[in-house]
Image (cartoon, rainbow, N blue to C red; front, side, top):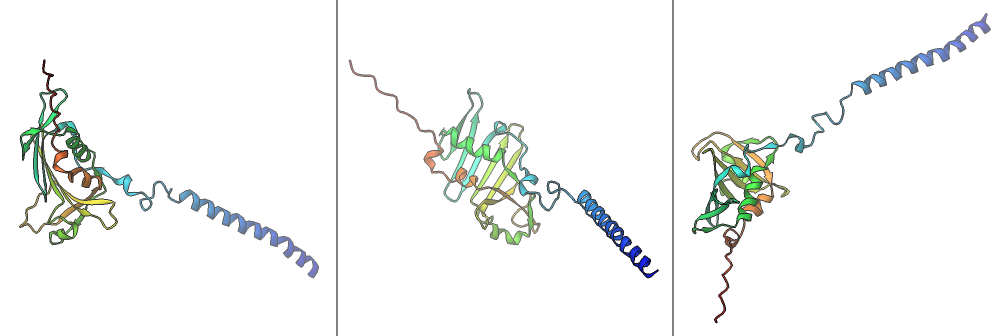
Length: 210
C-alpha cells in the first residue's frame, strides 16, 4: 500500500506542475493583451505629437506687419496690386522692402507650432524675458483681424524661445500669463541688420556717351 501511495503521489506531481505552468502562462498572456501600446500611451507620446498651430491664418493673409526690437521699429505694408505682391517699408523709411526677409518672418509665424502653454503668474514674466522682449510683432490680416506675437528669451537649453500669443492682459492686470515655446528660428527672423529689411536698389547703368 505504501508503494502504491508513493507511486500515485509521483504521478500526481507532474500533473500539478503542468496545471501551475498553464495558469502562469495564461496570466502572462492576459497581461500582454491588456497592456497599453507604446504608441498610444500618453506618458510616452513626444511633445511634437501634441504640438498645435498658434495662428489660424496663412502667410498670404497678412496685409500689414510691425516689428519692434530693442534696436529699432519697422513697419511694412503689402502692395497687393503688384504681381507678385511685394512689400513696402513705411517706417523708418518709405522704401521698397526686402521681400525675402519679410516672407521669412511671416512664414515662421504662420507655420509656428507649440505644445500646450505654461500658465505662470504675471509677476514672473521677467523669468521668461517678457518684461523686456526680444521682439514684438504686430500683424493685420486682410479680414481686419489683429494678432500680436511677443518673443522672450531662450529656454534653459536654447532649443526654443518663450513667447506670448495675442496677450489679452495689460501691465496692470494680475491675471496669469500663458507662455508658449516657439522655434529658435525666430531669433534670426527678427534680429537682422537694417540693410536686410530694405531692398537694395541696383543703379541703372549710364548710357555710353556718343
